[in-house]
Length: 273
Image 1 (tube, one colour):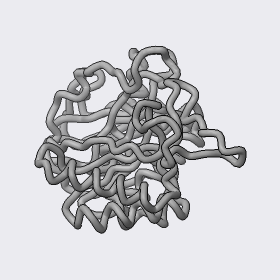
Image 2 (tube, rainbow, N blue to C red):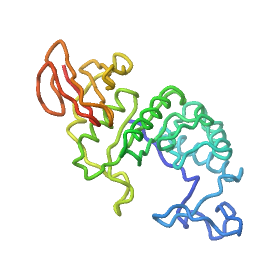
Image 3 (cartoon, rainbow, N blue to C red):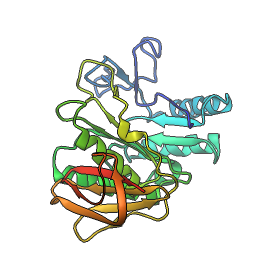
Image 4 (tube, rainbow, N blue to C red):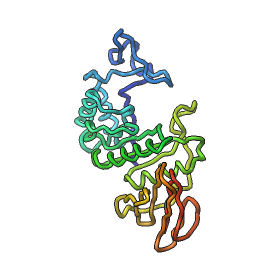
């Protein structure tokens, strides 16, 4: 198990610093900037080199405690101040400490060499273009971020937690394009805490180690072979595809044991030997 702790750098609760502290971010009128619509947080001034050094010191203290393996940085993108922050943290924590950054479905080439993985909080997953962008970002992150890579893919349900085709699509997309992690959760705008989710039986079968990289088939689906079976992802906007094997395989989604299986668009499945 890999354990990470979030280090606040972009915003925090108003109790995080004393009233009027110089590390709160201010607008052109000198007013403290609100952090985000939910929760009443205030923005922190990570353009301040002194504050960036404090964030780096916190990261080092967390890792040196032995309780966690690394840190998580939310609201991540490429800009001059975040690049300076990433450099400061990496310098002080050394090569072994892990840095996970929430870049959603964006690429961050400027900071890529300093971070080990994206937390891809993919709040956009309603269209074929959304799923293509998610897949492109995940594939890019697996090739360009710092080793060891710990990419984490999260999508949200559209109607309910029973949107199991979206669960399977998210899981298999993570399997065929990465060696990372996935989560299928509640949408953030709900009044409940973010990232709540169910545990699904689809996650319970062990595939074993990957035998090769994922391969895109002529029909548009992507497959990847593992020691105990094959994962297949069929993106939104693609036609239904037929997945055939030389021997009978058991579909985790349907429970059917047969040589040929139909797989719908915006879905995925794992076929166990």
